[in-house]
Length: 93
Image (cartoon, rainbow, N blue to C red; front, side):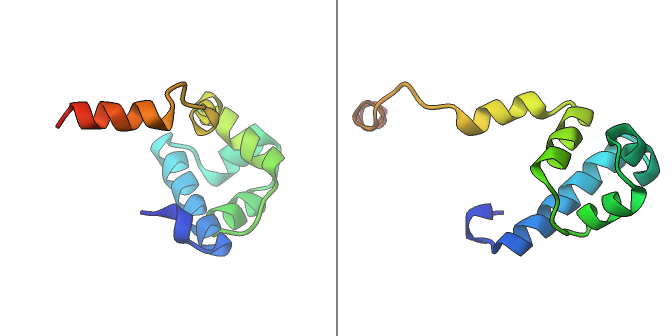
């Protein structure tokens, strides 16, 4: 899926689905997850349906899922220049 071209509302729906899948993978009920992060079960249900939620809640979810450190990958800056990257791709040919 190319998330880049989705509307923001569609991104929230897809993100909600992914969060729900991971919760189920961990064997947690909505109530158990809600208790862990300090929000209501109703709010978890809303998030999983794609309703907007705060960054604070998202961070709590990532911490509970032990995925917060994965955020580092989103903001890593490559130490290789575009020119070097191009040259390496040409060398492989």
